[in-house]
Image (cartoon, rainbow, N blue to C red; front, side):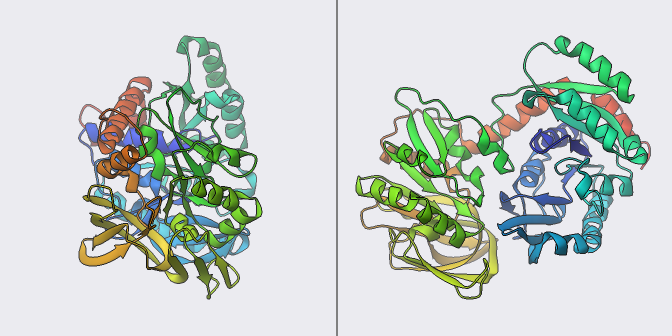
Amino acid sequence: MIQGTASHVGKSVITAALCRVFSDMGLRVAPFKSQNMALNSFVTPGGAEIGRAQALQAEAARIAPRADFNPILLKPTGDRRSQVIIHGKVHGDMNAVEYHRFKPRAMEYVMESYRRLAAEFDIIVIEGAGSPAEINLREGDIANMGLATRINAPVLLVGDIDRGGVFASLLGTMELLEADERELIKGLIINRFRGDPALLDSGVNMIEARIDRPVLGVVPYFSEINLPDEDGVALERPKQVYNEGSTRVVVIRLPRISNFTDFDALSHEPGIVVEYINGPPEASLLDGASLVIIPGSKNVVSDLRWMKENGLSKAIGDYYKKGGTLFGICGGLQILGRSIADPDGVEGASATIEGLSLLALDTILEKEKATCQVEGDLIVPDLPHSSITGYEIHMGRSTSTAKPFATILKRNGEGVSISDGGVSECGRVMGTYIHGIFDNDGFRRALLKRLGFVGGETTPFAQAREDAIADFSSLVKESLDIDAICDSMGFDTGLGVARNV
């Protein structure tokens, strides 16, 4: 189990890297995260919704994603409530008190998935959640030590030196654990170090002496990682610096933004700078942007109200009138339409709200969630028709008189013929329900070319992600004592078999 001193210290990518390392050793390996709180999610081939990080980890392990890799997914909806997804399907909405009472039952679902994976795989690499030392979350814990102690999993504790205070974080985490929990910690990992690891010798010697645990490696800062981030902490990185000739893509950072990994493929293009803004005075950054994107949202009605209250809706309207191009994905598609109705109070109180009215499209939110992988044909006027793939995650049904963006031909492998999204008469406003749309190299490059971007051919995005997994996994393998990690699990790296289970 990979635990961390805090959120965003690198647990997800370290887990992915170890999945690839063990897969390269010829072992059957699976990722696992018992409880994940994230608005970045993915749809498995069977139509189950799981955390985006677990889909990446499955890719690293060279296996198809499945619901058991993330049995409990919590998607915050606002007002201290979250949508609870169990084994890939919506179970209901709960507040913190309700979910705390539900945890014993949630642990049963977790153990169901764990037992199925344990019967099939040689190694399960488990990602923890946040920090195991959060005192207010210890009771009924199912995501960190509560699970580790139940299944007797050896634990590696990760700290991020790039954020500062790594030795204090590692020491403080150990001090706050119970004695039986500390026994499960088999080693420490220092992540994202810039410079010569020898400079850390004094700190490493001190921490090893203080807590009687080895530092199993120092992983260098890897600026070219180009792997999906799981939570909104990633959006707090310093703004990118624009170079002369850069093409700017602006994404509206909605309060409940979801699936912002949709834009990783745009960042992959040399010369494209993706900027996130969340309202005045940043709204002035719309000026000169080649493309403005409204992303997915977990609470589209609330986020649309927020846009109207802070002036972003007006700024977007002004940008459009000046000739700008707009793109909406999922909730963003709905926001670009004429109206959004929530008669059943799916997102809270029953409400109907006027959209930005830039697409001839109306949406009704429904209790049933659509989760499916899709294949289809792009049919946007003035863009080359091409095959596209992606996935849908939404609780709305839209009716449109606009030209469709695409025709969906398969949902979860079954043949269909469904119009998706919309394109305005002028062609400068378009939207789709398909997450991962920019991962399609043909569409992405054709759209950027229409916007005036002149860039050379780049590595296909799927290949670039695979290269990043391979490169980072090699770096982790070189940086960590893999033999010691295998020994903590009872694995013989020479034989590639378990000595004990």
